[in-house]
Length: 281
Image (tube, rainbow, N blue to C red):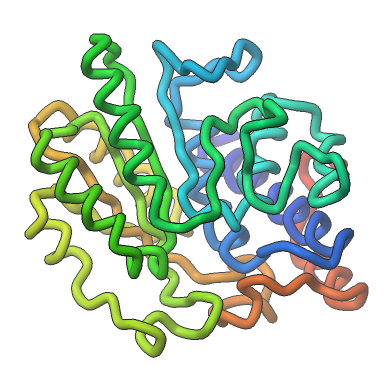
């Protein structure tokens, strides 16, 4: 079985997990989660140098990932479980009372794989910058990755952090932006246009790559290229074009599924489009 075939198999199962999780509690954010599934599976099952069975909060001598747009927690939780950070059966507790799988990731319950609470948008790049600086100070050659939503770039703290990273030559950091053109209130171009993101980040002193977030060959080649560019004095950004709701035809390409759970009929339709490859929880 080829590398990309296996990633596609994992992605199909993760997408099944996502729609089942949000349906079970009639709450959650399926759209962005489905759109970022291919990225998460590529990162966690191919690129990150990690040891899920010996996870600790410190993260020394391994790569780190920080999810900034924490509302897409369903894809994060499913990926962590499928990668072995905790038992897959725990996905059934998503957003329920006393669960470790809160609607937005938290740290107080000690869920393996989660090193920062996220959901207040705009903060993840600052956290990642600090973690990356700490690795450089400790002579730890591993990398720090972070993911953001494109609508999140309307937050001013992102741009403060972008200046900080460039000024301090934080070149062991790879940030990715999910460019799906949608946010909770509508298309980003309608809510607040983001303009030319590549030109903006380059003006802030970053190296910028672009890729398709659903074509495994292109996505993985771009991540490999980003890794090869580390250590050259500049932080690196990947602008990743995706379709919100990818994999479920009636959810694709619209902000209407940003934070809406499918009903019983819609769940059945979604699952009919997604192959069960690793076994449902």
